[in-house]
Image (cartoon, rainbow, N blue to C red):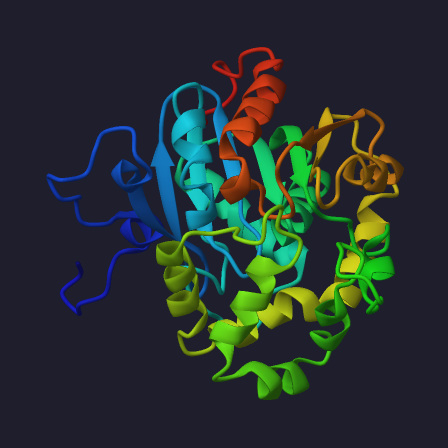
Length: 323
């Protein structure tokens, strides 16, 4: 710390958080090392890390945060150096007023990679985190070796088809996608009703109607009740028009890296692969059985195996994954 009390820039970029208690079991999600990494002026991300080897970055969706990887990340950390950020506006990360377009959010992840001295990584994005993952891969092509995307269609390439209500309660009935493009109205509707909103989210498109544990439900609820957090999450959706324009520009040159589109059997299923074929030349698909939209909670074992098998196909990055 400087004499004026300011944290020097170098240490502000990567700060380790306090150690864990003695009751934490090795190999559990709670045993991950944690960092707070400055990614932009006034913005820092809470980042978990564990494992060794090729870097693998896991990006969450909304209304979840990094906690959604609580079973998948420890399994993958047996084979990879796993990095789990809370995206801006979510979990324990900063809640800035703006910057929720996926290009800006991808720049946050580049800053995390720089701070952790990771030159090239495999990247897996889930739900809206898939939009960030795509912007990272397409906008920083030398930084991503392989890409997995889950339960998502890109703005401008299929997302808009889900923005209308339907008579059925299925993965095509997502009235909130349209409502959330008018943030002020959405906030008026759900401020103070976050519990009801999350109850609908976690019931909707679940394989058996109970997607997350009561303890994790409360953790997600506490996170979106933080000042500004509900608005931040809604802004993930409200930036759809900017995201569509950015994706059109990025997709002018299709991705040529391996891409895997993953869907839950009771939700996106094989359709996720199809949604990404217009923006990449080497796309495969996988379906997670006994899972709806909430893959990391409903069938984490199957998801971890699919991701491990896919990213394990990549030749070693040992010579290139660090500066």
